[in-house]
Amino acid sequence: MAARGEGTKRQRVLHKLRNKYRLQLLDEGSFEPRFSMRLSRMNVILLALLAFTLHGLLILALIVFTPMKEFIPGYSDQRVKLNAYRATQKADSL
Image 1 (cartoon, one colour):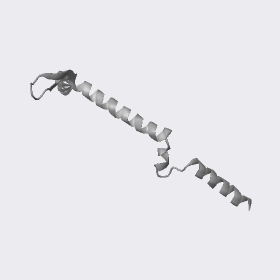
Image 2 (cartoon, one colour):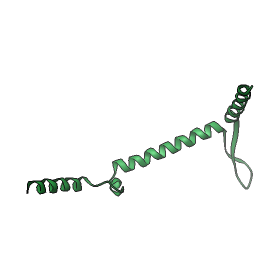
Image 3 (tube, helix red, strand yellow):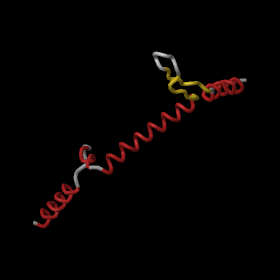
Image 4 (cartoon, one colour):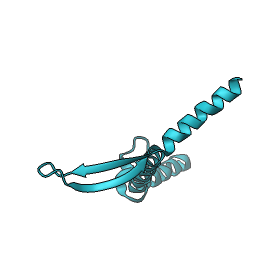
């Protein structure tokens, strides 16, 4: 019995996710539709996830491919690493 109730609950949730809604932007003065779009809740969720993922990839690309990575705490410039290595080698040779 519990599985049957769970299945109908799952079906109701899926039905709500797939149900189409209309997004319509109206001109305030004349109430003429300026933009209209049919969306479902699932489409909105997927678009939000896509936007979030693309935003994360853009931030990651900015950090990896630009000098911004030097502002990250604990990340040192290659020159600093090379100078530290040379200083260690010189101290060891003394």
